[in-house]
Image (cartoon, rainbow, N blue to C red; front, side, top):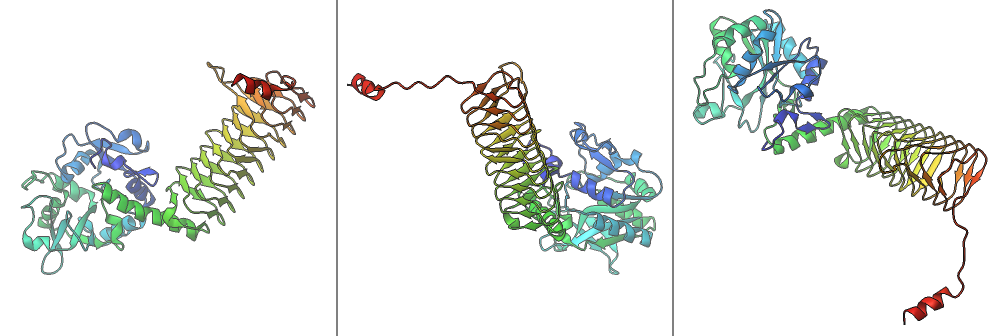
Length: 443
């Protein structure tokens, strides 16, 4: 990957690569999941708590990696081995593999696929009766013969094993290959020699076995993964107007009859309710959006928007911004760590930070809560049914009571009682003849 980030931690549609096969294994019914990590233990902090981590002290091949987890493998049952850089594998594929393996009573069953371009993959060699004989690696010149290189059926690196047979065969592995590594497919000949059956199960969809070795591969699997995500939402009743320009992460949930317009980015754990309109060029990150919400060309980051609310255009809802039912954050409005009450409006050109606004309040254009004194943040409290005029600044901590008003251009530094009008500005004074005086001074 030419990156300081471990390959399996590169992000794919909101999850690291390794999270995809882990999710598939869980969905297929895996009772125990073991991840093989290196001595640096870079993966452990990114894994679910119930995942067991085994350490491969040296990178000596896939067989050595599985051997590193031998202590976590019981003597009975089925063990499935999946590579951490094959993110498109799904639960249906793993389930079908296990069913075919257990039905045949095999020692091992490999998942295979026939590829137009099998370069880089181990080739599946079969005997005259069509039974799997061995897998030949092709990573280094000399590993495979010219006849073996023309084979298009490849080993995907995904296996189902009888646990006891696997443990016995791992003990017999040797590194007699060009790379001096222990390859997992080399357990197959010893299983055959022991009189056991080795089977192969072809993947119904070859794309599920695509691996990632560089950023070109990552882009290719991202396109497929994103298409699957889009299709899942659309089949559930969501309209995605232009899937080619829309990014939706794997953890996003969207309700039926919602319309997602072009060039939207729904990321992380964002939840969108039913019958919403998510306008073009909107970004929502880890946000909760209720039912029948309209968002116009806005950016939401860890915000919560109640049913029937209106956001934008060009609004910025920062972390812990909460719009309650039927509230509005309008054009060029920024809200941070604040609650806007039900039916309240912040129509345009305002910054509301560290504030609590009651129900049915209207915040005039160009209002600002001055929440920072240079050392600490302070909160502003604005009551219900308040009407603030344009260009009002609230110097926190300050409270405006219910049904109060503020005068245009006021800097409110003291509490405004309920039902009162707060005005804090110097009276206007007109200087007659000022323009003529300025003109004379410039001559």
